[in-house]
Length: 356
Image 1 (cartoon, helix red, strand yellow):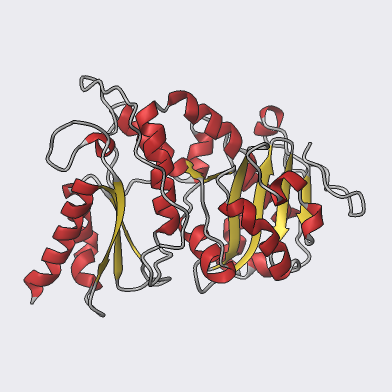
Image 2 (cartoon, one colour; image 1 turned 135 degrees about the vertical axis):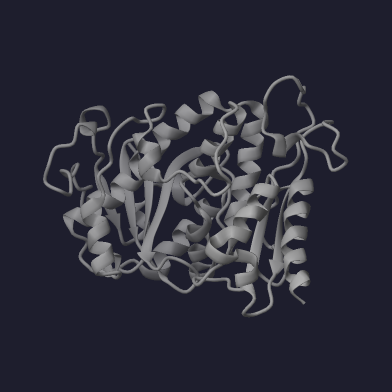
């Protein structure tokens, strides 16, 4: 077990279901002990001091109030195989978050997370943490679907609850209705202290399945998709963390592999193998492009009922995200292969130019 200092309270034993019922999935995936962390010394030494001699894989999630650059990050959950740490960013403050920074930025600690964009944004703008070496299970699911020839709509992103329920990964019903209701009633739910039993169980459940899901996904992802997953994860982490130096202070992106043997008769992730000239010579570089939209003109990109943005997404094999009300406003982020990103960005710009 990843141990903590003996001078601190022991981990909380596995907590019963937040709704007071024993869920069927507890037999197959028993709840893990949980340690609420308010001091750096409560975290494992190998996490605090990442090293190539002790490579780690941890599940990661963040909770907060309107989680984004301007919201409030309240907790960071870290799932190890035998324990969950809930890092309390309120009671632990800056000191405990600074202690997590080396691991969250390290290439020696793999962070498994579901939809990293807003979590990364909050970590970056509130604590100066550049989230790195991420495996995003939302991206991985889409790559597996594409790799295996199943079509999904451009904005049909699987939720964590749906992923856990998928029989290919966990096959368990993950009930969060009571917590969702409380969040709707009181958006400051994660800000209250002390953390209640329900809060601890809900926070733990959001990460304790991730390592199992990651292992299942690794068995299905081919080498090309694994590379695409690693670089897409880094681009997603940067997505809403736009700065003035074009991400020059962020860790470098994974290098383009040179040892792939391409079998063009096999269905693969096309965004990873289409060259800029349209020849299937090898995996193409993945990029992030930011398109600035004049203030007040985002409606032209979105269109009535979202019709225009849907058309743009359907016209290119790239991921397109809008900062929206939580920011960054008036910007469109396009992620994918060079060819498809250029196509998507050109359509966005063309839509704005045609208006004038």
